[in-house]
Amino acid sequence: MDADLSIYNVTTTLAAIDDRMIWILALGALSLVCNFIYFGTAMRLGFKYKMYTMPVAGTLIFLPHDFHYLLQWEKWFVVYDHWFMQLFFVGLIITNIMEWVFFYQLLKWGRQELMPKLSQTAFVAVMLTALVGACVIWYGVKTVLADELWFFSFGWTIWFCLPFVIPMMLRRGSRIGQSPVTWYAFIGMATAWWIAVYPLDPFFQSFAWLGLGAVIILWAVANIFVIRHFDAQEPASSPTARQPVAA
Image (cartoon, rainbow, N blue to C red; front, side, top):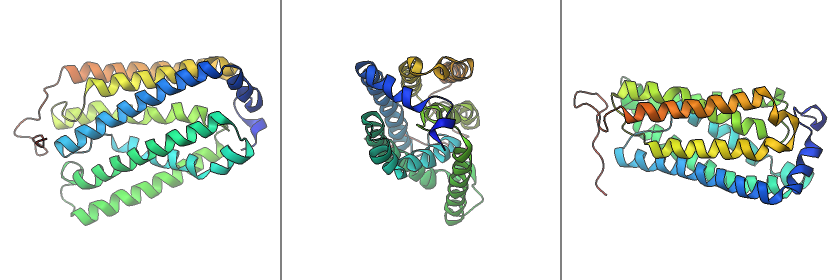
């Protein structure tokens, strides 16, 4: 994607980041820490209850998105050679590793809930095929997405996990695998990112961008509301009922 065709001005955006180094570092660090809490809490609950906790759609979009960013290391370290993009690269190494853990949890424990009639081998094959398909779809979307620095896509992709959390709890009959802490951290991550980029370019002050942020935050609040009104354990009659693993 030509930088001149980006939905924001790349040159002035990077210059604005340099002019607001402390602002960007502080809010970027807060967003990243909240992301680690969000992912870390979900991973911990997954291992505790022996289940997948990140919605499948979220895992399948997070993985190719972040791995694709890492594959473009030359752009961040040679073409732009900008400290903020390089710090983002380092942060995404950690988050991408965590996303592979989510995929492992899905492969290991997702069959009983999602496709109980399949063998484990067949289920793994289906999920691997889905991941390959998600990679192809993401690459096609990114090819035409006028988002040279990936700032829009970082906000856009986090939406993908939101619509599937409440249906997942409804299917399980409880909030097992979900915690308000997870989604408070999610809100912190999104809020910090939207505030961080707001002064960088007129696009980040537009209705399209601010509206997306509002929808994301309100949906996360709805997730918290539903979590608080569900039982902490699955009904004994649930076909996916699990007990926590002893520490």
